[in-house]
Image 1 (cartoon, rainbow, N blue to C red):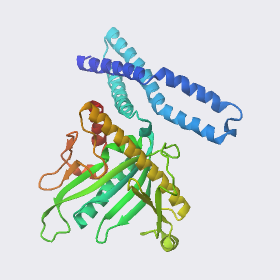
Image 2 (image 1 turned 60 degrees about the horizontal axis):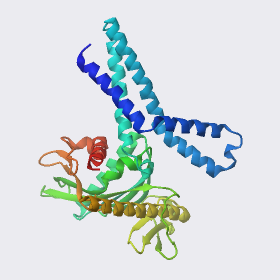
Image 3 (image 1 turned 60 degrees about the vertical axis):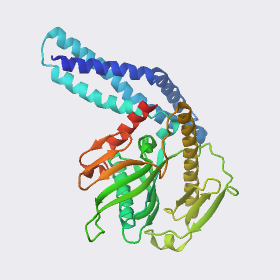
Image 4 (image 1 turned 45 degrees about the vertical axis):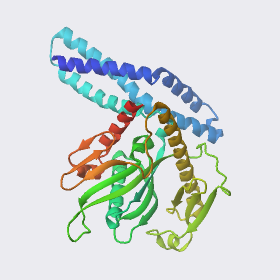
Length: 369
C-alpha cells in the first residue's frame, strides 16, 4: 500500500476525531435519546406546541448526529482495514479501503462545512430578494437570470421554493422578485450572496452589438418564523398598503386588492407579498419577511460594531459592494470579489452550480473571524 493512501486514511480519522469533539457528539447523542424517550411517552402530542418544539430540535440534532455517527463507524472500518492490510501484506483489500476513504471524505467535507454555519439562524429557511439596478432592459434581464440561477440551485438541492413577489419589467426580465427557499441550512448557505452582482456581456438588446455592464442587487434574510425577537407595533410602526396582484394568478388574484406592501416607518424597509389569493395570508407572510429583514439589520449593526472594535470592516449589505462578477465577453469567467474564487466557464454557474462559491465564502468567513 502506498504512503499517500495511508496518509489520506489517517488524516481522515484525525479530522473525524476533532469534529466529534468540537461538535459535542456525546452531548448531542444523549439529547436525542432524551427526546426519543419523551416522544415515545403517552400523551406526547397532547400539547401540540411543546411537542413541535421538541420535534424541530430533534430534526436539527439529526443533521449533525446522523452523519457524524456514520463517520465514527467509518473511521473504525478504516482502522480495521489498515491493520488487516499491513498485517496480512495482501493488496486485495486496498480497493475497499480507497472506496471507504473517498466516501467518508465526502461526508466529512460536508459536515465540516455545516459546522461553519453555527449561528442559530443559519439552519433557517431564507428570503431571497433581487432588485434590478440601473441599466434599463439589460439589468432587468440580468435580474431574471439571477432569479433563475437561484431557483436552479435550490432545485439541485431538493429545496422547496415559493415565489412571494415578482414584478415584471416592461420589455424583458424583472424589476424585482422575492422568493422563500426552504431546506436544511438554506440561509446558512445563501447568506453570503447579499450585495451587488455584475454582468458583463454583449447586450442582446443592443442592435449595435456593444458590450454592456449590468447590475442587480441580492438580499438574503433568515425566516425565523414566529420566534424572531423583533418587537413591532404594527399599528404605529408600519404602514400597510394593499394593491392588486400582477402577473399570472387567475381572475380572482388580479381583480382584488390581495397583495400587501408593508413599510417600516423608522428604517424605511419595504416588503411585499402577492402570491396568495388571501390578503390575510399575504399579510402574515409579509410580516414574517419584515421581521426577518429587521433582524438582519440588527445583526449587521452588531457585526459592524464588532468589526470596528477589531479595526476591520464589516460586510456591506443590500445594494452595497459588488460581491461577484460574471463576465461573458470578451473573456468568460465568474469570480467572487471577496474570496477570489473563480471558474472559467460561467455557464454552469448561471445554471445553478453555485456550491463552489457558497462554500468558499463560508471558509473565507471563518478565516476572517
